[in-house]
Length: 477
Image (cartoon, rainbow, N blue to C red; front, side, top):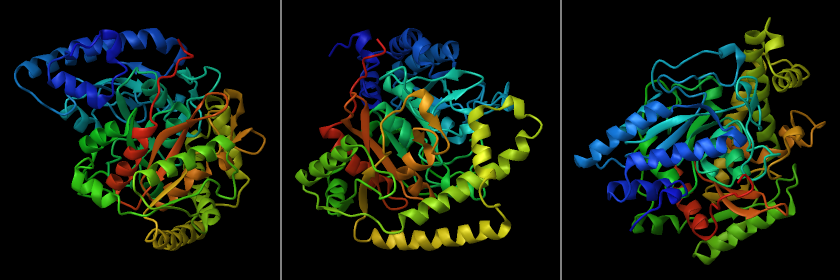
């Protein structure tokens, strides 16, 4: 098989890794193709905070020498990207904030080291909203990231640059983070796949802000890619124990594509709902949920309508930790620097200031009630170990619609509720692209599983991915 250089960047990470190992394409050719793609498309999309071209080329030559010596690492020569709030040695890790301007990571986060040990080459890191506090991606240091489907729209946030880079084939895959949908919403908006794992399954060590205290309950890091098989490949490379993550667990990864495992997963009952009763989705979003449910039913799964109880209270508890808790930490940090923060951050802090004070008693009650509702939710999952739901009630919105509060068309606390539940509850959840809006924008479906059962989630998502899946966006050309 001969692969044209122009075709390299549209290959999945799994396909690309295989072709490199089979010596049908070289790591240097791959890197040249990706850097050319970035040069052509990134000026319009602005997905990157930093492109590490010189070092990436040098590492591609090293990978080629290793290949000639028989190296067969699973990600050898595959270009990946990292969200710019996760440490990559020698790259700026500013989290989109002027208050961190000039900060350069001294060492790799454990998950970055694991990717490199698996042979991956970090081609650069991707842009984020200031301090990760938005579902769109814009900051004063690197500007605004645009959707490869429509430059007037956002690729999402806070892993929006990562999603745009992957969807536009400027990266074969990478790592984002998620405290309220920040992997899943950008995946949904950009037509790619993403996995929010259970806290501790992939170590969050080296992430800013740290996944610690109450935030270790809701905040995780996880893979983003164009296919579910790529998510599995990145998950296998990064999962595992690290002492720096307070939730970390030493749990081996199951091989989801082995027939015996797929057979076990097919016995799981699947429940689905297309409306949480709080944030009505678009008709096309509901259609996508039903299409995914039909695909699984046709594949032999038992699939039934099911909406979990007490979701409203789950959302309110998430808001207490995310909005009130983050504001409690952020407000003192920005005091005296108010003229250096974005209007979005000011709006977020104003929203929190208008809510009841986050006292020690309220924090303790929030954490206690979180455990109670989580127990009740997991009891419901005994009947439906896998669930399908929307990712968000809307597709990618216009840049000017973004914001915290009902004065915005894309009110974050309403439209994003479908993701926020599972940060509070700690469930793993994957996104796979299924449908399109009437404007031609991608619509993803969320596959939710039980804690530490990421492999079940990915196995079910893979069935959906086989029927639907990623399509290359065209409008940016």
